Length: 316
Image: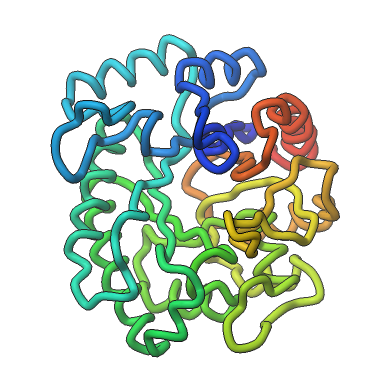
């Protein structure tokens, strides 16, 4: 069976689209017209989300706190022949590494996991929340222990909802070195936990060494990094890389730039065969990620054609 195609909806709601997001119905209609099989949900306003964690949902765009509202979303997706490939859970308002009390993070994860169960999402994305500079404030062992124990609890919550948890290792967050990825994955040691491999992030953290604290740790190419992650990858994002980071409001490197296919340096004929061998996917999704790309809406069509070609070549 051929891989199914999706794209992250956050590309149209944050960064360059933060002040003028594309509404979810418009996104769905465009993706269906382009032949996508589904969408990966950015589970935060204005797209469908569990609701305001801090109180009333009035003015909280996209909030679906009631089961009946979530059922309506499921019916809408089904009527369009679309499905969800996963969710980027809205955890960035919580603290993970710079506190010894992760109860709020865990509670918010549970809200997202329960929401995902209601709308039929099987994979919940997490990251380390705090930037890599947090390593200057919290010693490595303490930081790692906090992350590992928290994610072990989250994995148990997700397992109860029939879900897997996928950690996106990227320049913008702590523990972004290749050895960190292996060390934390293996320490969490849960069957439903794995690494979300984004080919742009893979280039930036595995080859460029972007935002590595305390010295770079890199490989000559992504293939060697992927081999290191063998058996640990449980979700895949495909997009190009031009060896640069997206810049924050101060002009500083934030996270990977995610240029459309053909605008970067990646050789997918080298990367994909190794990525397929190294992965242990419990699903059949390949997802495009255009996060922070300035013209993601316009680039979606060409990226779909590129993904279709990769699926035709490698996705069967």
